[in-house]
Image (cartoon, rainbow, N blue to C red; front, side):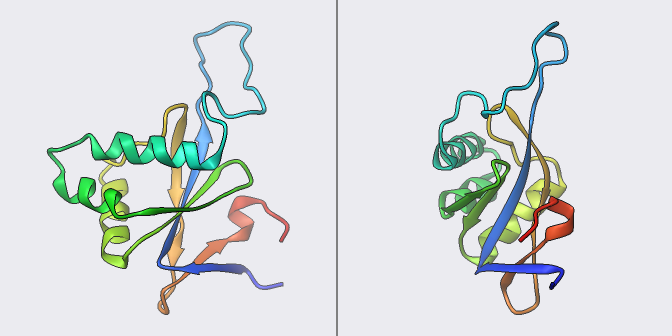
Length: 129
């Protein structure tokens, strides 16, 4: 089995983890993501939050030009856009200025290989594909 999975050119995987309220005694994490029903709604929330930060026009412009590509294994948001826009999002994440959707944290972003096809480490996600 190959160590990588090629999904789509000019795409980015945003690997999320659900936030658990630590100060709420007796509350456990549910199987369903909080306040979201579909991957597209999670993407819409992510896009909306990051477009509100008008002081970072490059991020707002880049996020406005991205599109929902998919929702994998209830924690990987796939988005698609021009490579320049995806690079702005990667840089914003490295500077900790990219905001996660409500109820989530961003664990890490997927990588692109030299040919522009999205490459995701399967072992890191723990998926058996």
